[in-house]
Amino acid sequence: MRKIIAAMRMSLDGIIEGPNGEMDWVDTWNDTFDLIPQIDTCILGRGMYPNYEQYWLAILANPEGILSFSGKAASKGEIAYARFADKTPHIVLSKTLDKVNWKVARIVRDIEEIRSMKQQPGKDMYAVGGATLVSSLMNMGLIDELRLDIHPLVLGGGKTLFKDVKERHALKLLETKTLKSGIVRLIYRT
Image (cartoon, rainbow, N blue to C red; front, top):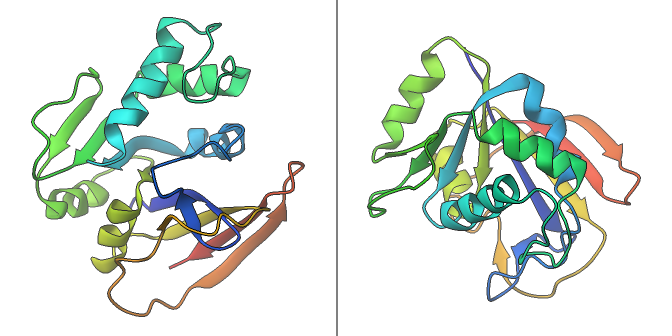
């Protein structure tokens, strides 16, 4: 059976974005690209998908251009991920989103369809986010592995990752790794 891997970035105080959706504390997404060889599907929630689509399509349209999100040009890793994402199926879990513009994306209305997809042959699936999606998948017992990249800063307020998880989940630590950037990666089996 395929695994669903949730990989999220968070501050030391458990915040994944500032009170107004700020992600300016994330310098690069390069650290998460090691998942590429093991996945063949990305899963996103309604809240995260529009910005995700805009970010990666902007890189595809102009790989050397300055990104409005960061004010910097895309890294080589980000360009490689954008190309990977442009040929990888993306599932957007939403009951309210009307359409997606990216040719690789489709909307799924029922979380049980994701459970069915997990039973099909293929590589693992990457739950990109956001917090509501990860919580929903955890509540339904669909997350198999949780990768948390803990940034060495305290944001002091904003959206927490697990605010919508309804019950206790015991996790088994599989790996701890300190990245060159000072980020600590924790990998858990759920």
